[in-house]
Image (cartoon, rainbow, N blue to C red; front, side, top):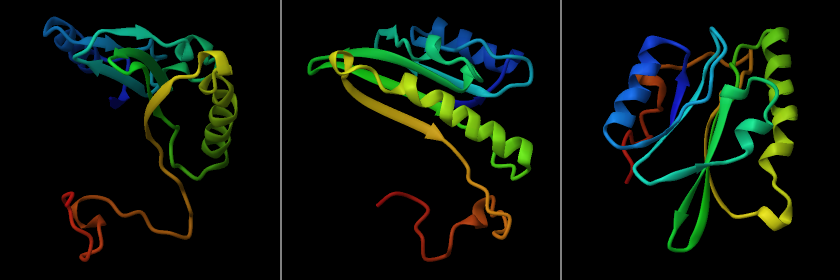
Amino acid sequence: MLTETKATAGSQFLAEAFTAAGYAVTFPDHAPGELGVMIVSRLRTALDPLGAALDYLPARAAGVVVETTDGPLRVVGAYVPSRDATAEKTDRKKTWIQRSLAPWTPPPARRRRCCCSATSTCSNPATPRRTGANSLPSSTPSTPA
């Protein structure tokens, strides 16, 4: 899953390159200036109804269903709106979360295993931002064990 994709030549280039290389690509339409997600799979996918059900910032989430030997697997990617702590951005994030909850929960007859990857940032104005290589405390390993 790629996050922070846009309606730009760069994101479109990635989608086309992955498609040309034989990957299944799900890249929702993005409104100008909006960020979103792209799902790239080496396995064949079917479109999950999640994307069609989102009516607010729909490029922020996408879903596919992959058939596996253990049955269908729902793969969902999400990019939650900005960490910016302004009232406008906080309201935007809350609205997206509230309006996105129902489509994420299918009726019991359609439930299946699900893998979700999401990017979200939280904002606490009292906590300074930490970015880059020095953002981890020195006691935290930088690579998985």
